[in-house]
Length: 231
Image (cartoon, rainbow, N blue to C red):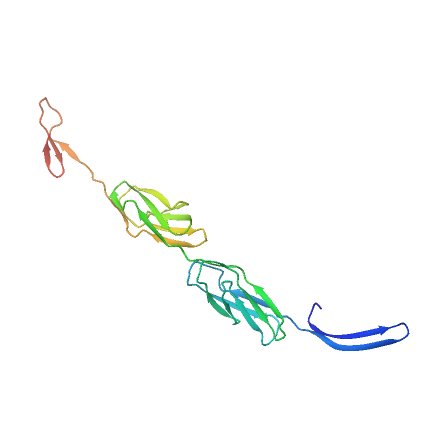
């Protein structure tokens, strides 16, 4: 039987001359639940993220029992429930609805990706100097880095696939360095350099002569800041 309903059963025996009819108890095919379910999210890089699960049946059947399987060994018997995954990985949750006749339907949700964002720090080879100033920056992380958006505090961003990069500053100032790191699992995190880069202005040398021409032997004074010196 492909659909629910009540089906009477009758046996008819015919030997060509006589006919005998016997009626048996009807066969009752109960209606299966028709389940749909949803999750509040399918991806998270927050290890404390709470996933909210909801379910419903399109058939009007009372007293349905529900069983959630979250794909990590945990379960719930509520129609609507919440769950925290305490591990990184992918999980395949599903829910089963069963009616009083033990007919059931199962709904499989899309795979959930729950990741713990890697721990990352950034350091510089040198943090201060005189203009022009060059230094190397490096990111240390326990995750696999895919791309890095480097912001050296000068108003522009450089995209790179490397966790180490060198940069040259052409003018003095204090620069806060920040990065947006994207990992292979799709998570990203902002990683800031704790100590700013400080670039001091280069000194400017000025001088003048008391006499620039004359006959040997010639004594002249070289005036520099802050006091003249005999040459």
